[in-house]
Length: 257
Image 1 (spheres, rainbow, N blue to C red):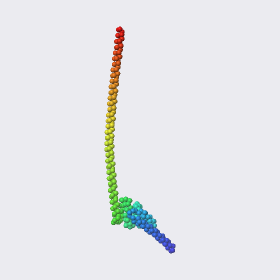
Image 2: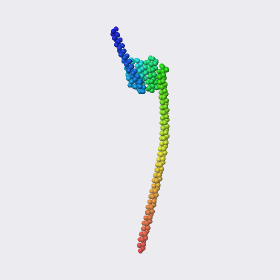
Image 3: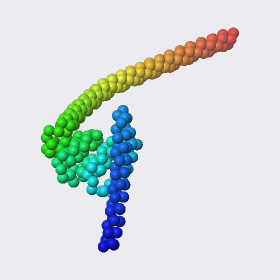
Image 4: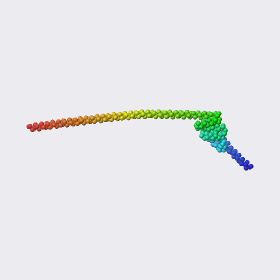
């Protein structure tokens, strides 16, 4: 009996020590969490980070404690670790046995999705929470807010699509304008080319005419020169004949004497 009593006393002492540690970590976590909530003008991520560490230590001693798990998920959410907090709240919602606890976990899970701008997920999660607690005003408000953001997002997408369509239209117009410009440029280039060809032909014709004229002039000059030479030759021959005639007369006169 003494051995059993001793064993029971040792076990009770161990459980008591663990409970004291657990309460210590929970108090620390709650204190840090409360400190983080004091200044609403900025995010005290340091205090919420310390609260997260304290809650994790408490959960190491009592892993299935629903309240400490909920506090841990909240501390993650306050640090803007929305993806992690969403997973924690999802686990809590699955494990919750009380409808109120399940609805609360789903509500906070919806908030985690909303922070990430996962609007479809947040809307679906808020609706699940409202199926459990239909009259919850905060969940109703958050659902309406998420749906409003969804509509604004869709309107923005439609506007962007319209802008893209307008851009495409403008591009098509610019293409048509460029085509027309190219056509006009080609026409102008063809006209210029035709003018150049015409001018070249005119110049060639002028050169040919000038060449022909020069050739004509050179032929005329040559003919004139030949005519002049022939005239000179005739005159020279006539002079020679006259000279020969005079010589012949002189000889005859001398003989008669």
